Image 1: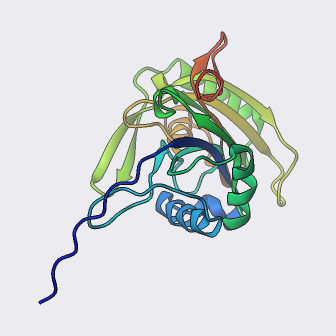
Image 2: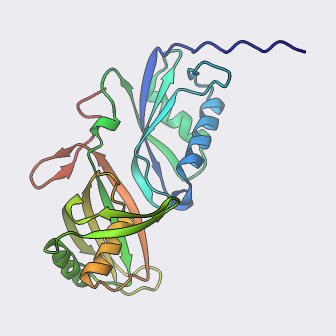
Image 3: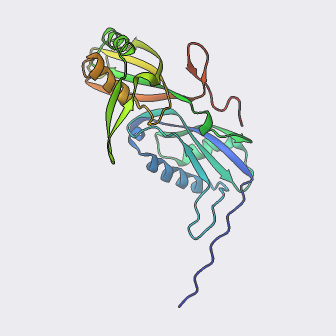
Amino acid sequence: MSKRQPPNEAQPVVQKLRLRYAKSGRMRFASHRDFQRALERAVRRAELPIAFSGGFSPHPRISYANSAPTGAASEAEYVQLGMREEVNAELIPDALTAALPNGFAITQCVIATSGSVADRLDASLWQLELRGVNREQVAVALNQLKVTPDVTVDRVTKSGVKQVEVGSAILESTVTAMESVAGVEACAILQVVVRHDIPAVRPEDVLTALVEYADLDEPASSVFTRLAQGPLTGDPVTVGDPFSEMR
């Protein structure tokens, strides 16, 4: 009988890189796990000196923060890499994007020195493209939602139905119109700043609340995009850059 191999020693992390990445097109339907696998392959293809954990099954030192739900596009997702050697952070976005599938892109890389990105992700700015309803309809429904107390919707999960409080999580909102898309005459663009509560409010929860509580007609189709996530700033409330005051 062969001897059991001793566990591997954890590799020390000498540099932490914080990345902002985007997912668009067909990749908005990719799950968080799909992106994890794609990023790990991209790190290997780009020959980056990623550090590995110890034990019998070492894993690359990669950590994620508050990923967008499957089906939503995003311009503001975050991940951190632990490197066993120092690298030039300016070269990382192009190197990794070239190794990722089309639809995933690394848009920024900074060297981390302190703090946690997750601790600065207080809220998200979501854009809801609602096809088949016009701006006026959405504006009326939004105003009705604002004066309705206890706006809670049901979300079906693997563990059952979960209640999500929507009304108190919406901090700011604006509605604009968009030219017709794919033969649909009306198209409203709703942008909402949503605080990160537990459970997190998703854009589909906002749409469900508008339909159920404010009698908005169900859109012919909808596209959700996270435009930003980070700390809450200003008055009116906006979503800041989580990299702006930390590295």
